[in-house]
Amino acid sequence: MRKGKSLEVQLDATEDSMISVQRKNEVFHLKVAEFSELIEKPEATALVNINGASVPLVMSGQTLFLTDKKSALKNVTKHLLKVFRCQIQKADIGDSCSSYIPTWVIEQQDPIDTLCINAKNPSASDLSHLFTKAKVSDKLTCTFEYTSEGPRPAIKMGKMSMKRFDNDSSSWMTAEHLLNLNFEIGLLSETSFRNRDMNRFLKHWMAGGCNRLQEVCIEMQGFIKYGEVLRGIDHELITRDEVKEYYSKLYEDTMEIRGGFQVRRKSDGKVARLLDNGTSSEYFSFVVFE
Image 1 (tube, rainbow, N blue to C red):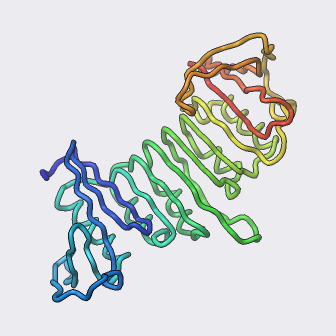
Image 2 (spheres, rainbow, N blue to C red):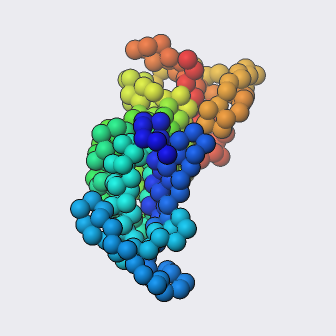
C-alpha cells in the first residue's frame, strides 16, 4: 500500500483493538491482542523496534500479539501513521481505552473526521480533556453513561464545531455544553433539559449562535411546553392546515411539517420552525430552512 494523503486510517480502540488502513479498494486490517489471548503457546517471539522500544511480539495472520494491548495499540498506530505519512480519520473509543486514547488522538494537527465514544463511567477529567482539545470535522457520537446515582459529572467542553452530533445518553450534558456546540445536525436522547433550557438554546440561535444548525431533535426531561420554550421570542403560529415538505438530513428522508411555530433570525434572515408535536411530547424538534 502506497503512502499519501488518500489513505484512510481508522482506529478501533474498543475491546476489538483494531487498526484499519484503506486506500480506494485496498484495505489492511491489523488486530492487536495480548499473549494471554493466544490459543497455543508460540514457538518463538520476535523483538521489533516500535517507536524506539524493543517489543516482543508474535504475528499470526492479521493479528499482532504483544504483552500490553493498550500501549501496543497506541505505539503500533503511531508507527503506521509515521510509515504511511497520514493521520487518523476515524476513532472508536471504548471502556478499556477511554483513559489514555484521547490524549494522543487529539495531538494530530488535522481535525479527526469521526470520533465515537462508547464507554461506561468514563473519567470526567479524560472527557474534559478530549472535549476541550479535540477537533472533529464530520461526526461526534457519544454513547456513554454513568451508572451511579451520584451528582452529574463535571465535564468541561470547549467550543466544538462539526457536521453532526449524536448523543445517545445525554443526561450528563448541561445547557452550557449545548451552547458550546455548533453542529448542522443534532440528535440528543435522554437529556436532562427542561423547557427553560430549550428557551435559552432558542434565544442563543436567534442571536446568531449555532449558526451551522439545520436540524436538531432533543429528547427533554418532561413534556414540552411551547409557551415556556418561546417565552420572549417573536414567532408566528402556523396552522396545521399549512403543510411544508422538506428533506430531513437527520432522518435522511422527505418529511412533512404540519403547523408549528416559525421564527426568523434578524442577523441573516434565516427562517426556522419549531415543530408542534403536541402537548404530550417530550421532544424539541427544530428545523432551519435556507
